[in-house]
Length: 148
Length: 395
Image (tube, rainbow over all chains, first blue to last red; front, side, top):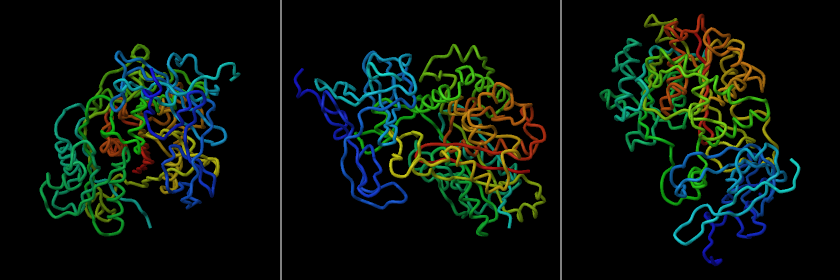
C-alpha cells in the first residue's frame, strides 16, 4: 500500500508521523490551559477570557487512569470490521497537560494486559477502511519495557 | 420565607418498550397526577414539559404538546431540555413560577419513546460534535460507565460481585412495582452469566432505554392549604448545578477532560456537587435522609452515588451494599422503586419518576416496597453535557 492510501480519520487532530505521532491540541497564551481537540476560539477557564491560542503537540505518553473494552459493535458513525473484532479502550492521563484523553487501545491488546497506572504511548493505527483508503486514528499502546 | 412547594399529585405510565407515541404516555401520567391531586386540568396555570429529542418537533415543544393533548385552556407553557436532568429542570421552572407568585398550580410532565439498542448521535460527518466523535471512535455510553467501575475496583477494591449485588437488590425492590419494566428477581449467578458488554460491566449491570411517562401536579403551600392539603409532601430543594472547571473526571460525551494545567482540579467532583447544593438549600444533611432514588445507569455507579450523597465515606460504597444498608429494611434504602435496573431509562421522564416514587414513599403509599417511617428523601442523577439534578422531598 502506498503512502497516498493512508488518511487521517479525523483531519487535523494529530500529526501523521508514523513513528512518533502527536495529538494536536492548543494552549491558551494567557493562562496556559491545554485543549484537545484544539478547535477553540475562547478559553474555557472561568478566570480567563483569552482568545489567543498556540497550536501545540500534546505529550505522546501518559499513564492509564482507567480502561475497558467494547464487546459489541457500536452504532454508526463507527465503521465496524466484519466480523466485528472487540477492542480495548483506555483513558490516559497526560502529566504535563493534566488532562485525560480517551482512545482505543491497539489491536491485539486485551483488558487482561492493562492496569491502572500503566505507561502508554500514542501510535497511529487503522480505524477503518474506506474503500482502498486506510483511515487512521490515534490509539494507545503499552510502552514496552516500562515498569508500571 | 420558606421556599417549599407542595406536591399535590403524582402519576406515571408504566415503563416498557411499547413503541407508541410519547404523548400518550405523558397524557396518561398527567391525568393520573391530576386525579391524584384532585385538581381540574382547567385550573392549571403552567405546564412544564421535559423535552424529548427523538420524536420530532412535538418533542422539542413538549410542554405545549402535552397542553394541547389535554385540551388547550390558555395555560402558559415551558419546555426544558437538560439530558437526564430534563424532568428536574422542568420542575425547577414550575417552582420558580409558583414562588414568584405568577401561578398557583402547575403540571410537570416528561415522556419518551426510545429506539432499540445503543443511543446513537445525529448523522453526517460532524467532527466538531464530541458526541459524534466518540461514537466514530467506538466509545459508547457503557464505555464511560465501565471506566468508572474499573476505577472503583482499582482504587477501593470493589469486585464484579459488588456490582452484581446492586442489581440483585434493585431487582428485589422493583419486583412488585407496577410501573417497572423488568419485574424479575435476578440472582448473582444470573449477573455473572450475562454477557460482558464493557469490561467489567455485563449486560445485567447496564440499564436499558425505555418508553415511559411521569407527571407531577405542584402548587404553592397557600394553595395546598386552601385545598385542605397543607400536609402534602413538599419539594424542599432542587439542585441543577453545572460542573466547575477543571473537572478531573472524563464525562460523556467528551473525548478528553478539562486540562488542570493552569487552574488546578476542582476539589469537589461534579457528581458530588449536585446533591451538596440540594442539602444546603433544604437545610438538612445526609444524616436526615431515609430514602434515596439514584441514577443507576450502571450498577457500579450506584455505589458512586452512595458516596456522592455522603451516605458513606468515599470508597465505602461497596461495604454499604454488602452489609445491606441500602436495601429495604436497611438504614437508608436506595432505589426502592427498583431504579433504572428495573425501569430502563426514559430520559425526560426519569427524574420525575424518581420524584413520584419518593412522594409515594413519604406518603406511606408505596405498598410492599414501603420504607418504614420515611420523612425525607433525595433523588440524584447525572447526564450529558454538564447536566445533573438532585431533588429533596420532605413530608
